[in-house]
Length: 175
Image (cartoon, rainbow, N blue to C red):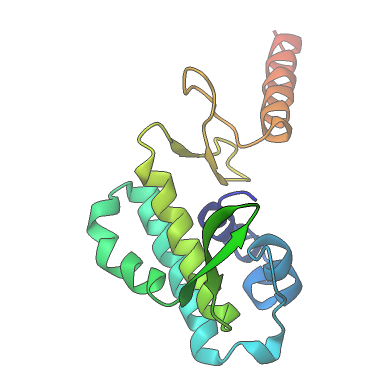
């Protein structure tokens, strides 16, 4: 699964482009932010939905300012929302310890998004950028070798290249 913090931050694009806010679409939340369990509209109280909107705002602020340390307390509050228990089993002659999630999917979701945001900053090699396509502006992780990637996808890159080519061609035709 991709980084949930980046997916949540990029969800603002739908709102800014005169479309419905995907954070009110529980199918979108299930498909993009959860990897287990299913949420319905009845699962979210108004307060929990507001927490999700606030978390998106926080994630965007962190990614835009790149000043993670200023937000540690707020991020810890979100990560503390999920309840996990440790469980031990004996399997294949080996003792295995694993985490079992609590029952509240909403709080788990908030905690997992905050945790994914932390993962971006723990790895000092990770560079999060914003797409240079003005119509897109998605956040993405630059995994290129020399960290020179400018677009979130080949689609955005090709779109800008075609526009640049057409502009240059039209300017040459007018000369």
